[in-house]
Image 1 (cartoon, rainbow, N blue to C red):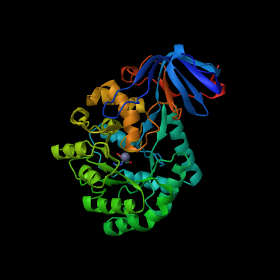
Image 2 (cartoon, rainbow, N blue to C red):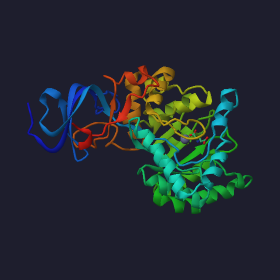
Image 3 (tube, helix red, strand yellow):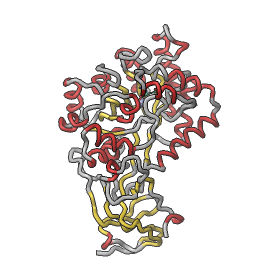
Image 4 (cartoon, helix red, strand yellow):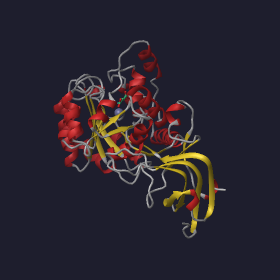
Length: 400
Ligand SMILES: N=CN[C@@H](CCC(=O)O)C(=O)O
Ligand SMILES: [Zn+2]
């Protein structure tokens, strides 16, 4: 049946495969509609269904059989930084281990950059993400590590996304070594006060396997203070070895615990019990860039854990902004099916931000769409390294 024409609307037709991701989270069903069309009006999806039933609209954009997906949700990135650490990456490729010590290099360069330079660097990195199909991005601070530098990092990030994360507890900065307790007091006191107005989330690098990061007790202090200040919680946990990060995240009801590379049975059990509350966000670009073992995604999915994928785009452990690259790694290296990987990069990642408006395509929702120069989502992993994904722009100038 054909609906009434939509005024001021764009009909996107010729969609070979429309991946809606509207199923219940436990099903991880991609909700595919073949030979589909959708109508976009005022930035929202006004109609979707089989192309044969599509209403008329003012404008028409024919995708000639391409696949359309929810725009990727990149729920873990550190885009506010200056400086270059390519030599650190090269050293790792010849056997150096990552221990977080290089973060200090980025902190020095970030502190030295003026606001305009930092803003331009972040803007370019977000544009790079959008060009690859990402429409929602979370951005952390964490390379300032003074009250003023963390506050301005978040202020700048907030200009580009509502999903900003306070990460004053990234590492203990060089000038505070030997005074860890005083630094934690700074983070939980004046730094949190200055940053909370610009942040939705707080995060901590909880990692006993790095001398630069934070212990379980230090991490708990930071997270509890942030929660009391009204921020949602996220945790960097179990990245470099076994540790307390996952259990702490679950105990405090964090929305996400990220990395999850080294998990024991009790960690997996805790994540199963917390499914629907705490998402395990896997960041396989990090294992690629640090030559580390990949997290066991198959074990987590089979156990019933809520799983997300994100880039962790940062200058140290993964300087890639590409969600398609992450999807390809998840399929090739972590035993995820292409469908599970797409789900985790969209709906799963949205859940880790406690968002149910993005990561899916539904009538009434935002028209945050990715289009592939390919007929199906399978091509994201199949054509690894080929730039087939981009954000779909449906404004009049893009339509025919
Ligand atoms: N592990 C902590 N933070 C980042 C790396 C930061 C850096 O090395 O600059 C991560 O998520 O891997
Ligand atoms: Zn990170």
